[in-house]
Image 1 (cartoon, rainbow, N blue to C red):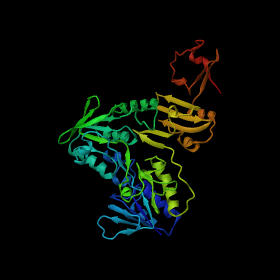
Image 2: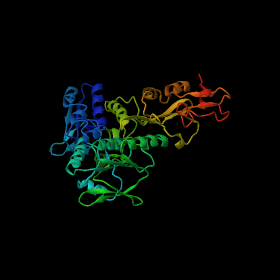
Image 3: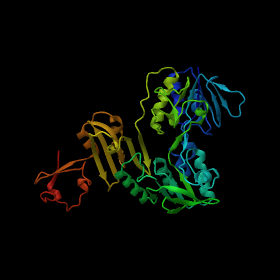
Image 4: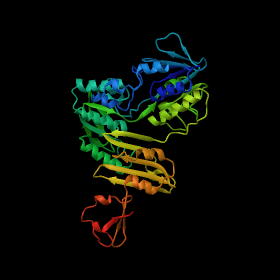
Length: 448
């Protein structure tokens, strides 16, 4: 059997690896427009600041493909799929390529919001960029050098936008992050933690504008800045847009596969066409798209089994989870982080906000099950949280894990609970007195 995979991103590469793991006999051929074997996109911003080299980014060198007997075709554009003849057409090749099973790992492209002049100035290389590939990073680095750029704007305060801003700032550019939402990392953090992150980023010399809608990119021959809704202008020599992704679906659409925002798949990652599967950023399942690495990894296992006819595991969707370093600080976000947005009640929160040490930890529980978490600035609870998601947990164990204590006034019995108070007991001023009986701070003892 011959399996053709279009796309050498995380989902395509690991789909190929998982197929080979399950079957030694299957012929596997991968086609990608990339010039490089599989590399990690997470560290692309570090290529701009020269913290890493291209070689550092490449996860699987070409000998890995040879050893796995996976035929890799770099620099190759697939222009058409013909489901009836079970073939694909490749640009520059007169003969079509046949398949028994086809896996579409088409990935995604950066989303460019409807900002006046944005697409035109990006396409005309006038100083507006998105970052999605090694070539994008090299183009940004070259532009900064050739134009002797001094000021940069990053539109988008998500995970990649903040890391990009950090590396641009490390390249000695005056850097401003412009975020449409009222807080940074709006999908990963709540308001309180977002405020702590903003303060930490500003302490590192990066300016942050929140609740800021960019209306226009300014400049004639080259970019000179942006104009926000409300009229405020911010100067810049380069503008970098990191505002989410759009699933790549054109190839599937032209082959008349069912598409909406993404390529529509069922629980086995089968498309509407027999023997064609889809995986990763390009898919839509139950009206949802993911665009996160954990989803790609999970889906790559399921699609491998489905391709080989072993439909044992159904895709259930992926709980959003991220563990990354943002400006050098560990940030983990998993599951439900803001129960106020959920319809049903019965939510419980254990929270620790240590602003002095730039640490914020929040665990979200329902019916004694761990439903979500934010861990910022301290990673020691990360493995516990990942292993206990959706499971029953012991609240005392959680309190110990987060070092959340209850202090009891030895005079009147009033309890000061770290988990619900704005300030940890240890961070209270020395002249703190019990609100009930005015007993001094030293008159409290930790509850055993």
